[in-house]
Length: 298
Image: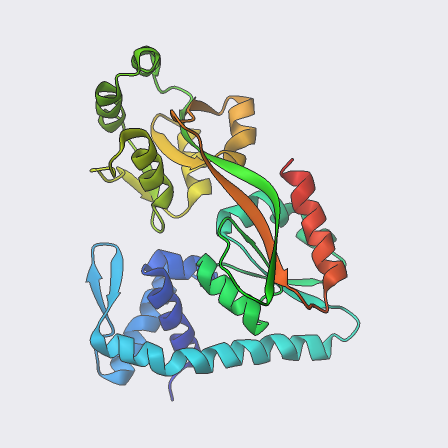
């Protein structure tokens, strides 16, 4: 009989596009993800993904399987959450969606102090809004406002996407070029350095480059690491460059562990929002989460 966890892993790989991304979402090892996928492929008798570098591209059979199982898995996840609520009648459980790095930087240190149960989920913002509408999530933290008649947004903070570097990165030449704003030479200097990126979304780098050089970057980072917090830790032990939200590295910049190099000729700023359903049973619990974010991200 097929193991249900194989399907859950298959869905995570399909959504994230990488074995590493799926492992982070499911909190299991990457070899475990590989084992589940190979076991499912052996069970079905079909190849479900084409491996292209680090990316996992679904085959046609894989797409058919995903469309067939995704609704059933969503219902099982809802049943799992509702079962937990019914067995813990005196302790509410709320589900909160956000990106992995935001959770680590803001809410993670306070989880053990919360007087209610919390389920944290990571994913793409449009999908999280959809899960909010369906009742799978109760609150999301997002820089994107996806219009929905049943969802209300509340802005509470902002993030500026900035260029940072290791504290031993020599930026004297860069600062001289910046003073005269020779954009062509600035771009050359930047591309001559070592860059860090993540296995998932490279949207920050693309938008920053487009805003400052009127083109998309024509290079790939030298070092691909699991997430933005990994980049910060790597920069803290050497040289290199990366483009990341400022609130994720404020403490490291203030302490001198890494350095703020450039905010761009025009700042790239995102407004952060709370999003929840207009009618919710967990207004008090959501208010507690909101209060933590507002205090941490002052």
